[in-house]
Image 1 (cartoon, rainbow, N blue to C red):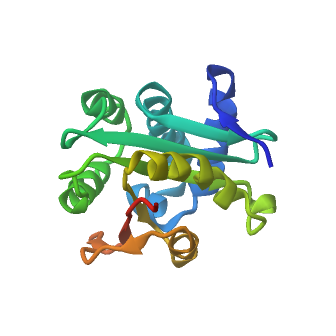
Image 2 (cartoon, one colour):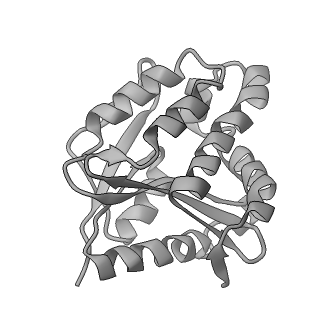
Length: 192
């Protein structure tokens, strides 16, 4: 399966994929509880994440466009380009987004440099066929070569299982959204 670095030409297709895959995710439904509002604002949220990843992190896409992974970099105790991301997120219309940000920031380890998987999306008709694993492989291999850990927040039991198969373990601090679903912060130490 071909995996490559995303380019600006991929941006709109990846943004559409992220919206399609995450529009009914439990966390997305919590951030945007109104369906019509979610359809309008959700693409801007994931567009902000994607643009940040393309500018300050790493974005990989499958050759056929059926999957993409958006990685951020955490260095020196801070998200690389964090102010830029903050400015992008201020343009997203959601009263709950700041709450989500505060809760996830409160559990996100920043005492060590690491790669941060912000989102991984695989088209529905390609799920459970190894696409997610293939998308994780390049950055996790680079982490292993560089001795760098990786971090993410899983939003479902299914995604948690995928990440566990790749060496991630759930941290002891679960994110509990008010009247919403749990999120599972996960950490992966590099392998030799």
